[in-house]
Image (cartoon, rainbow, N blue to C red; front, side, top):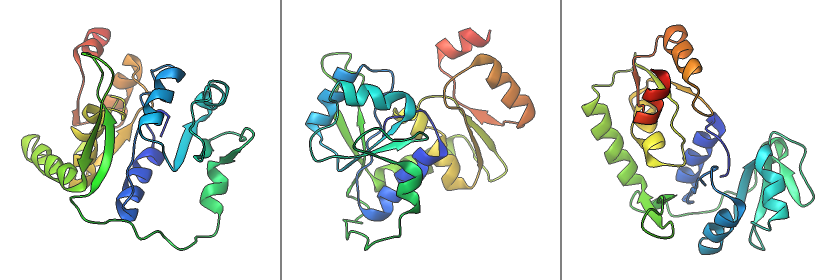
Length: 206
């Protein structure tokens, strides 16, 4: 998945869990050659890319041969299917994947601060255990309203409060990317009770 935070991203993560597939969100801040290197390590069966990234994927030959490509929210380029067409297609026989909760579900790449980014696999069990711990630590309740502004390609944005909030039945507001003014507006308008902000975001808000 190559795109900003969205409901579709989360729905696809949970679809992968149902199918026994592995979900790999790519860091949209990276350059096409970096995406190409990651996808060479882990060639995907399907790549979904937001409109802003489709041209770079094509021109930089990011996608490995044999990968089906889906363009999110735009008319598809040559060789690409549109997201709406994918969802509208009649359902076929679902693959019988490994639904063992210990099977890999999420593949995130590290920041690569000490070398090249490295892929790290997390199982469904790991996500569930993390969610339970986070719900307990934040004392989450179904009437909480969680704001997510951190990118979902890192476990910080995806797993500190977002997936725990969904597990606890909370309301989640997603921002595609961080904007200090939009955070203040959301806190007031959506009556946000919980959010995670890193120091750079707090400095921007101050």
